[in-house]
Image (cartoon, rainbow, N blue to C red; front, side, top):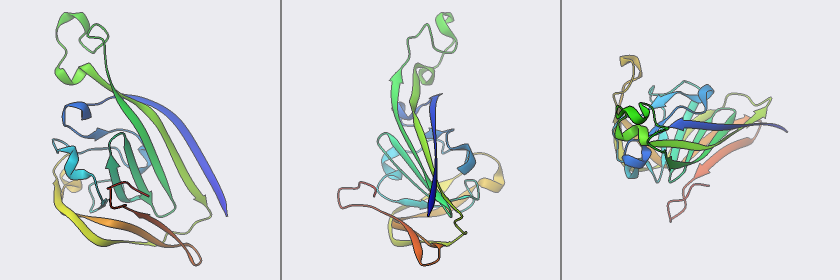
Length: 175
């Protein structure tokens, strides 16, 4: 089994510190913006992809300072922190034209694990958890309603008799 790893440093403006979840990282597995969603609702499980993200993504999980994506052939880990930006360095700068969201930026690293030679397996969620979420951000063809979350995400047979599994611990952490 071969594993290919890509590491990228990423800095982007983010509003997560003020209650809006957004991400522009892991471009291959989905440029997404979730709109105004309390971040706590998105934690504690794996959200299925019901068309709101790029087709490569099967499941997404997030928590304080991380995003986790699972595809048919690997995973993407996005570890970050939110930093306050000096008002003079924010977009709009000292002109006073910047918004509250411009005062923060997201800084971190993205690591993508591709299982070389993996075949596209069949993904499924196990043990439904949390509230369904509706996504109405971006083009209409990416809107999704009733998106389920699960305690476990499972992609079967990425290699013969080899499966990719992510699950939540009782404390809500992702493994």
